[in-house]
Image (cartoon, rainbow, N blue to C red; front, side, top):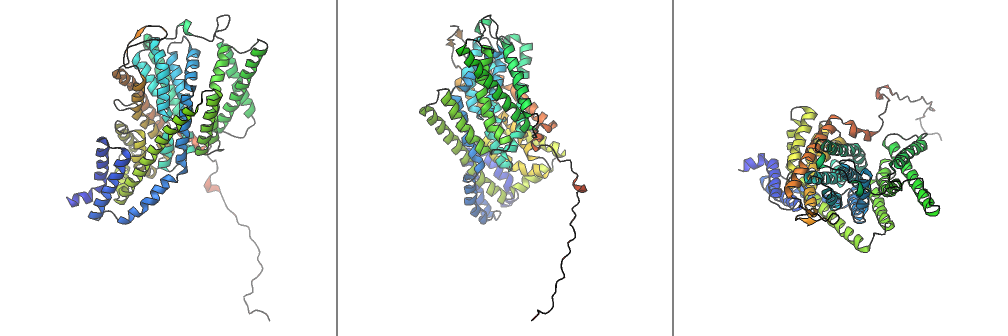
Length: 551
């Protein structure tokens, strides 16, 4: 028995952790307990040197002293303040009106707002609960299929996991030893493409099953002009003019890539906001306005979150601020926006601060437990076992990526993304690096994959969040007065299945098209290192006299 334990200490230790987690023990305590128990067993068997435990206090202190992790409470606080200040409600109402009678318009609005909330909050729970409370009753009121409605809301909320400033990407970058800014920049395009795939699915459903995604009735569409029109042409002109202005301001700029796009968008946003303010002042003073009510409302609702996105992500992308500094500015910006909307109160701030403290403590405790586990795991050469296991897979990089993503997909049925990030990623990163895989690309692939952990029936957290706010019993709609059927758990689960398939497809797309991520490196140098010659000029030195010193 002792010989078997000595030969298989690492796999037995990992299996013991999986069993402890499946039995329902908290992840932080399971990690710490398994690490300490196997440290004692390893010492008794001569497989683990006690000196390893002397490094434990320094590792725990390293967790507390990690500046990168400070971004987590900042972004969490920002997201909770924005969610409670009513920004999601304003966005969903306005964008829903913008799509109007278009078939599937409410689904498009939820996806669009989900992407915006993801780029401003970074918190899945806040996005899913907000859209579940606001959008689900409206979608049910106008006859949306319950599976489509719940699936769209849950999936759009999980965009907060892959679109920066995602908390998952912060943890992923920390575990892989990479820059959070690079991880954010690399994830931006895959996040937008995933949102586009969601919208494409909604479009496909609206074409194949028109009754499942009806448009709003004409009487439910507001922001109309005196002639009965909606003035969408005005919004289109403003959009084009803003884009032209942004390009004009940047035409002689020397920046390129993502920095150019961010600054161009920022200039366009400022122009649109200035035009809308002038239009509002003229309307109040002279009664004349050149923008439609729809264009003005859309601009006033869209500019604050877009400005906040630039304040956070823009400053990180162009190198003005670190992710931690960007998070601090985002938290301050959220408080300012809440104050401007007159929806900020001490009670709201207190609730947001309490929730932030709980989540931050949860993350830190898991990370401390993971440090204890990894210390023992490395002490019994577990990292060598994992590396040999993964690097010997057939197929090279592709075989490794397929196997790893299959394992992570299965583990996501039982573990949430924090547990996956703290337990699995540190084991996979060294093997990926040894195979020559770019770790930012690898992290984004796993980030998209781990997003399914929110959508997996029956343990997906996004499904639990939506279940908590979806009607469990029949109710009377407050607008139509009709008696509405409840939303069943089965409908929520079946609604999530197509979006899990879409997320798997997205994993394949990121693997097939790494350029979606690799743009974070910027323009590659065109200089051939082999052609570089270093010439040292000849310098004539005076002769040195090593003879006897002169008297």
